[in-house]
Amino acid sequence: QIMIGFYDSLRHDTAGLMKSVSTFAGIDDAFYTDFDFTIENKSRAHRWSSLRRIAGSANLKLEPWLNKSPGLKQKVRALYNFVNVDDSRDIEIGVAGRKKLQAHYSARNQRLYEQLLRDYPSMRCPGWMRGGASDQA
Image 1 (cartoon, rainbow, N blue to C red):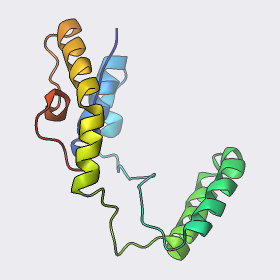
Image 2 (image 1 turned 135 degrees about the horizontal axis):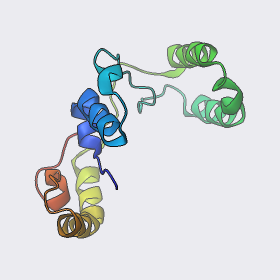
Image 3 (image 1 turned 90 degrees about the vertical axis):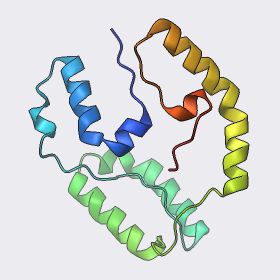
């Protein structure tokens, strides 16, 4: 068996998607009833791109060790965000960039949509997959 989920569900109804995954896997979904979902890997605007590159390289080397100490990892991330993340501005793709991405992926999305409907006729696919309105991230 296979379960297919979409980012749209993860973004708009995280608990609902996780409960569906749990049910599909035969795991008690009660764990997610009051779970506090947080965004751990959000795209952010950076003040200094050179510091972002250095931090990225350091993260690659230190990540296995930091993953063993989640509290320390959160503190290091918070310090980095305080120093180099500019929360006053959002990352924007822009209209031209969005159109370019839609043009690049539209044929692939359409083929995936057709395959999913053929193999899983009852599946509800997001609008962007069939050329409909795209979800604004």
